[in-house]
Length: 194
Length: 97
Image 1 (cartoon, rainbow over the protein chains, first blue to last red):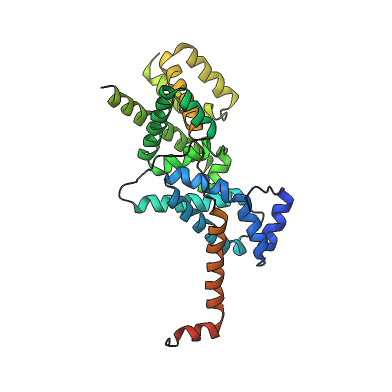
Image 2: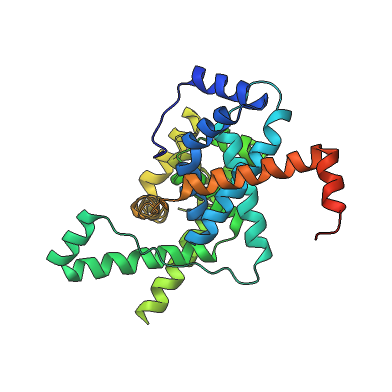
């Protein structure tokens, strides 16, 4: 399985209903639909591929346990992101020092462009590393809300649902997250320049 | 422009980026931005941050991801089956060998 299936809303509701009744194939269809985006989200939060793989497994095990007790219409993507977000925050809290491993992945296009223009490639890598360091140093909840907004492309309403807070609180968190990002980024740029 | 005006307007910049301001607030913000270079620079830095975050590469998905999740779910199913079955529980209490 390559995880590339896309379920319609009606199909998804059917799979949820069947999975709640213990249909293993239905639950597999669900994680086949969501395993990649959930992995990407977790990886962006924890920055470590091995840990992201473990946490993605744990996310779906928790979803498997909890699904039968979910009542009413379920926003599956939002619910899974909420489980993933809580897992990430718990993991980060347990660490004394958060370790962010640099992304090693580059696309074929990027590798080819890098060969053509190594100086430009170096600058791009340096910028990404700087951004990763900034994210790394942010308060985990600020990082989470910024990633949900900028990477997952979720609305304030969706983020509020995932985090279980009001929309006003999300807007306030986003403002503080952007301010924190900007502050850390400028400190790092100044340190680099001096 | 006074710093007090900037202080009251800056929290709106974030919601403005997300297209979540009321028309009245958008008008108030835009009027302020037209006169305040500092707040225009701040908005530009938020926009640059958004571009930078979007440029981060997509994580490589491990080829074993699906199988690893399936294996974890199967372990959970076995664990549940073990708890659900009294015979399995009594078997687990017997000394091995």
